[in-house]
Image (tube, rainbow, N blue to C red):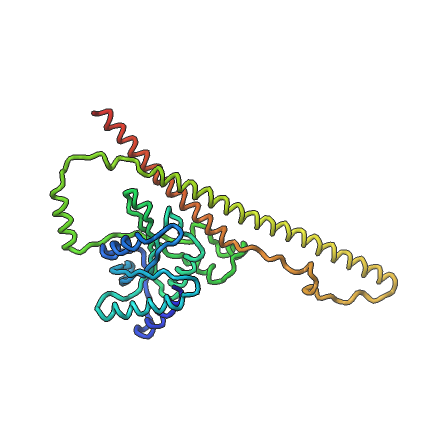
Length: 339
């Protein structure tokens, strides 16, 4: 998808004169685009999420998503073919007068697990080439519990700078002051429907029985919370593995520094003895050729940063779902006592 974003930028630059684009702060999603995403999500599995392109227009600070189309499932090494397919689709949509301005992409994510390096790479490519691009995440499993889970995200400017530098060392992260909460910024989504659709919904709602039903008070999120807790434990284990790598690097670095200090002290002592003997000091040595002065490669801290962000997301989900479940339970008990 990164090739597609770059090629799309080239076409946009040919069609439009350069202009200053205000950064979007909210997303309006048309009902037809939402229904297409929901339909495509039926093909998704936890190990094989589905993706697609978002079409629309950015107007002032609002991104209007009016349509979308699915990306075909592809194997590794088919990036070029995927980009060709997407560009052909855009041209066909243009021929039939359908909105064909790319404004981002969407992806399914089960149990809220979507923070990964591949998603970061794709969204970075989109934002670098199309400033106001967003990534919409749809969780089919959470939505199956009766709560539509669709969210819009963008990478923050600070994380964009970090990812563009390609240096994911501790010093670089501290220099740019990037925390796990600085990876994404979430934009509010508003679902929009045409006037005729709203009129049909109002007509259908008018024929419903107005009597209160307690089905909405059923707590049907226990399995979701349980699985989220399991995912949180798995993420904590992965984070512990990344922490061990960093601790091992710090230990090896300290050992190397001690060996360097010992080596320089021994060389200094030899020079002092040679000076007492009236001999010339040892010749200057190129320490870069000495193995003990070769820097120990620092492990990338990107995985740790992403895992921390994912764990924070799991905790937010558990807090929200547990709060909703508790509220429903208390209300249900109150209704039972009043009967």
